Length: 255
Figure 1 (cartoon, rainbow, N blue to C red):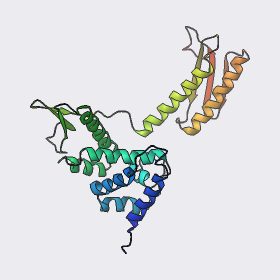
Figure 2: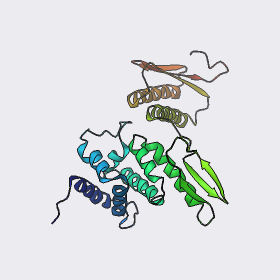
Figure 3: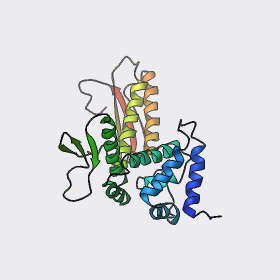
Figure 4: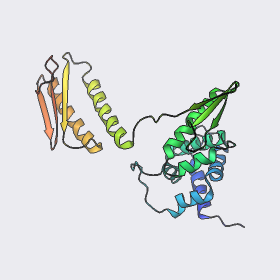
């Protein structure tokens, strides 16, 4: 009887947990096991052992600097962790015999996880779109003289493709999402109001989840006043204030 290593034990527990969600996620039998085996084969036992076993740093799902793969494979209790792990394995499977895949994997290990996964995703989608046609898609080596992230080969012509980085860092994206949510909340709450309204939100604090909740409560206070025909109105707390008044040609001026 062969004893399981700590890495085998960790991955086995993940597989067991993921399989409990297999039918709910409509995954075919065996896909979870095959995908984990592929990740071990491509990434290497030494890398995964260091990532999942030797590294004892606590994981925070809210930490933008956390290694995504460590977070996914440390928990199979979140559906997105299962799906994203299988997604990465699927991209590896598409380019398993591509000579440049080892370059991409080494880049992924050097804290370039999201850029590499994005490159593989775009290359895999292009390759899938070319099925049944003459073009082929190959990954480019990570060399100074390389042009593009992957190449589309068509009729004797090689077309390099560079993947633009979509979006921003979590530190930039998160406040934008919160701000968009506040605007949507205001739009939904005032959709049936007869008067056009202008909301002005001011805060000396950064837009975080805590500031969002505070601002939302102040907005609700203003909307309650509007329903009572109290205009203009303002609510404030700590370093955050929300003012609301009728939208006019001079709405850029303070209420």
